Image (cartoon, rainbow, N blue to C red; front, top):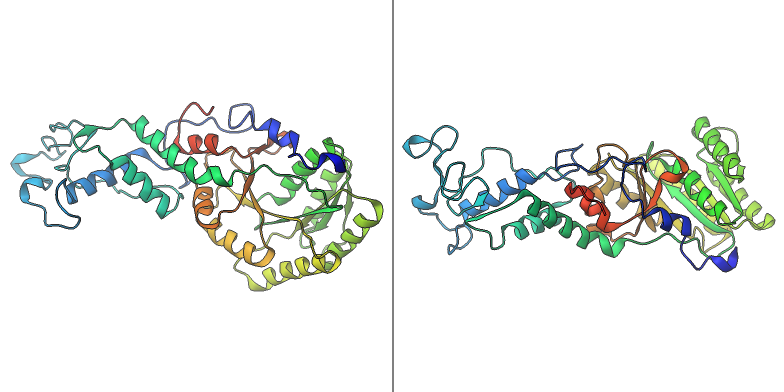
Length: 374
């Protein structure tokens, strides 16, 4: 097995071909629509562009006083209650999809309903606006622009996960309660076992008896030993014992589960810090990988999680789970923009085969609501 570690995990790479298609446990991408606050809607993007066009018509500096002839009319003889007759609005000269410097401020809210982050959202709006005054804009064109801009952010952090040559290769898995850490460990362990590695699990989530039982079941399923202690035992001491046992019996890869903890609870994060320090006391180079598991439905709170866990545990890569529902995981874009952390994989279901290698282009298209995720 040691001679095969220089190559990325073949199982994870092979599954990436399936991406987010039906049959993999993921929801087939449909038309753009709000979904748990993580999907950027096309209409609000057009609203923002129209607002800016109305505020700053061509030839006028940003913030200049706009002459009355350039301003949108909110009523009176020039327009009915529904806005008919406005230039650039429904029934106006520019048509319903045109962007015009005479377009009025939109009545609907112009908030971009996504967790893409301000910087990325601003770039998308600027790209949609560029060179499109008095022109029709097809919503499909907006989707393609969105997908392109998102892919630009995600492509540099699309990194296949590799099992390193160290023995044992120690993988610490962290995250908040319910993010899917234990299930992710089981799936990664299954991939490693399939490739012929000797696997060991350390059930260091000693706060929940269910977590210990769950990891033990995963271990039996893939033929991996699981080291555990009774509920309430010292997690750092268990991690040290697992390191020692792995060294003695020739384990290739050691996965260390940790208790789900709120990133804003100092005493809980201190306990995680203790686990990391104890691991390093046994092997200064370990843990060799620290994977932060994020729930796709979390939203903006995931930014705070990434910052806190990176500070305490030294996160080396991300895995996003629970993409088998309506959530599109747009927060990954904001995290990639801010922290530049490698994104290794996504989880699209509960079964062993539902962990897929991260594909930036496919993910971007799914966020944009493009039907052909290919």
